[in-house]
Amino acid sequence: MTELVGWLSSQGYALTTTHNIVRAVLRLGEWMIRGHITITDLEPGTIAALIRADNAAHSSHRVANDSTAAVEIFLRTTQRLSSSQESEPYGGAPTLLAQWCTELRMNGYGHRWIEKARNWVGGFLDLIEDDKGGLDWDLADAEVINGYILGFSRHYSSTAVQCLTALV
Image (cartoon, rainbow, N blue to C red; front, side):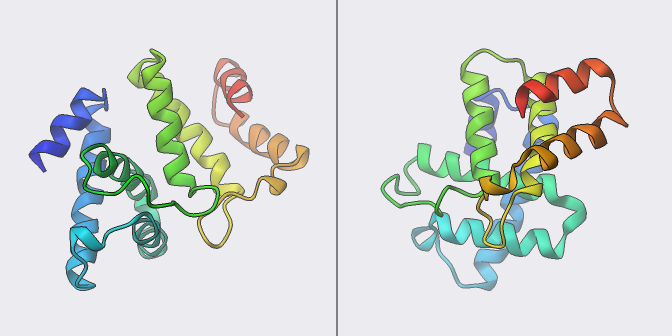
């Protein structure tokens, strides 16, 4: 856990995000114990299965559960999870979102902006996520995109809506 927290800090994760990721790791650990899964048994498919099952059981903590994708990146970076193992087809929404946020961070975007972007885009990805946790881009038609932006505009400023429009 100490190594994970240190890695998250070195990657520029905010303290609140780190807290959510640690909660997700605790859930992952509990799930592994219940399923008699060891770290050597862990693979992208099992992590994605945890996210789906945990989101169904704890829908009010979805963002924290999505943080499990950062754990997958950590496990790959520290070679506890093989990079040669294939993720789900197209990657699950949480994994793709975490990878995108990592790229934003590497391109110099600030932590607060990345957290806003993660939350804003994450809500959109939820709309196009299929039953298996993958993204069905065929669902991202003009009606869905415009509907998401319109719903977003009811709760945010015009500047935030302009930013979201650029992201989506």
